[in-house]
Amino acid sequence: MSIPDYQTLMLPFLRIAGDGSEYRFRDAIEKLAVEFSLSDDERNVMLPSGTAPMFDNRVGWARTYLKQAGLIESRKRGFFHITARGKELLATHPARIDNSTLEGYPEFIAFKLRRGEERSSPKYSQELLTLDEPPLQIATQSDSTPEELFSQAYQRLRSNLESELLEQVKVVTPAFFERLVIDLLVGMGYGGSRHDAGKAIGRSGDGGIDGIIKEDKLGLDAIFIQAKRWEGTVGRPEIQKFAGALQGQRANKGVFITTSNFSREAEEYASIISSKIILIDGEQLVSLMVDHNVGVSPVSRFELKRVDSDYFEGNSL
Image 1 (tube, rainbow, N blue to C red):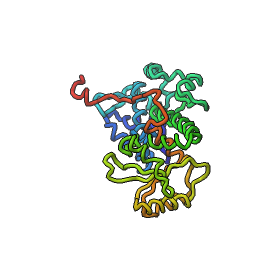
Image 2 (cartoon, rainbow, N blue to C red):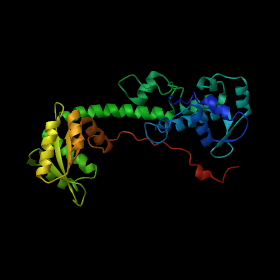
Image 3 (cartoon, rainbow, N blue to C red):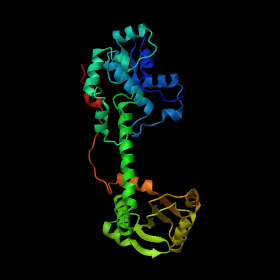
Image 4 (cartoon, one colour):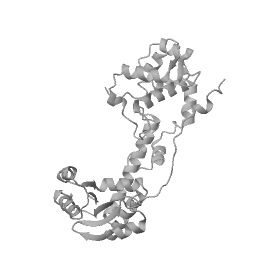
């Protein structure tokens, strides 16, 4: 069974509290996981941002929406119970509770207005995401929580950025590409200083080795580099040539960086030889560049925050 969306979870969540008892939120998550027969793998699926399990997050938003509609309430942290309004709704034996159901309550409408969910026009969504492709309908998409939608929007923006960045990298001069590799490796913590790295890259020219860079600032070990702008797929012969060059230097660590991709045979060969060779293709290259702010600059920064319950512990009425 797939992971249910947060609206599908609303009715089962409310039913848990239907007897009027107070329940712990964590127990509700476990009950619902059993009710929907979720596997361990499904329970372990994380949000795109990696900040929380997707199922737990969706249960959390089902609780939030039910609470904002006045169907449940919390007397203390981590617990909830049904309200008289919630009991009245269950007494009608609804087949489903979703956002359209909750819109029958003025408190929920006020909640939506506070969150800006009424601004659902395509123009608004387009301006929010600044995408050239059809916009993600943040306000109207019903099967994802706000965190999921935020993460999905971020991933789409990042994917567009990486595609554009790779196009730029593929047309730079060989000398500029070498400097780009230097900046990236230093940004990742390799090479000691940029001055040291600049001396190392592009100076070896020894049988398939473009440079040698320190593994750490002390230079306790060395990493041999092959960095090439490539038009077609990099095959096994190129990796064999690089591995042979490493053996000639009595080295056991190497990084092969290309703007294109590697054949399956090349990847398999790199995985079975004694030398440790890391293959970085064009997609991985630009992803690392974005991670380490090489060739890109931040435009906006957002922080997702939650209430610090510990701050209020012991100070509630």
